[in-house]
Image 1: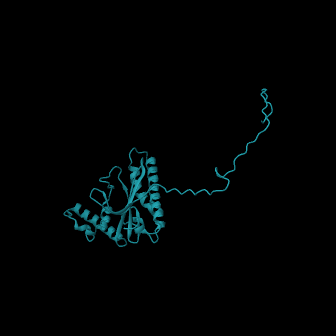
Image 2: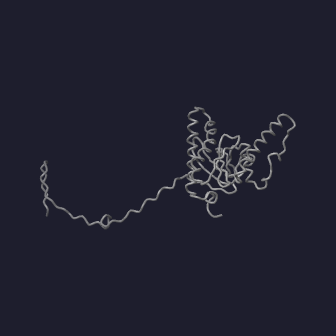
Image 3: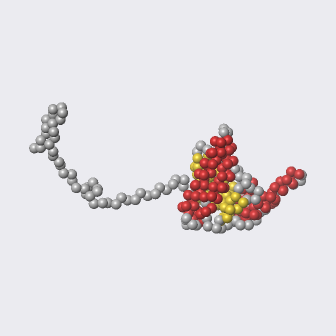
Length: 248
C-alpha cells in the first residue's frame, strides 16, 4: 500500500497530523504528571486515571482542527468524546508500561472499548453483544443483561456514523515521559494486547529546519581574501630601557 497510514486514512498534510498526535501525547503526559504531583500519592494512580481522559481531550484540540469535516462525538455513557472523520473513529488508549508481549502493546481495555474494536473484526461484524452466553437466571444476570443492552446501544450509536475504529496507542509514564505512539486499525485480545492490522509508528523527534547554505561572497572566504601585507614600524624605547627595533 502506497503512503503511510495517516496519508491513506486522513489525507491532508500527514506530517502536520503526525505532529499533532505527538503534541496531544505530550500535552496529556504533562497534565497527568501535574495531577500525580498534586495528589502527593506515592503511586501512579493519579497519573493513569488522568492520562486516558486527557488523551481524548488533547486529540480533539490538536488533531481535530487538521481533519476537515471531523466530528466530535460524545460517547454515550462514557466520560469522554472521540473524533470521527469519514467513517473512521479515533479511540485513544494509554499503553501499560512494561506490558508488551511479542512486540505488542497492552492497554487497560474497558468492556465498551473492546466491543467497539470488534467493528474491525470482519468475522464478527454482525454479532450482537447478546450472542455471547450470559446467565440471566437471577437478579445479577438481569443486571448484566441491562448493562450489555446499554453497551450495545452505545456501540450502535457510534457505528451509525463510523465503520472503522482507529486505535491511537500512547506509551508514556510519569518517569519515562512519552515513549511511543502507534496509530492504526486494531482489535484487542482478551488480555488487552493490541493487534494492529494496518498501522504507523509515529516519530517523537522533531524534524529540525535545514540550515541554509551560506552564500559565497568574493573576498570573504579564506582562500579568496587578499594576502595581508607586512607592516614595519619604529617602536619607541620601552620604560624598562629596552632597545629600539629598527627596520632593516
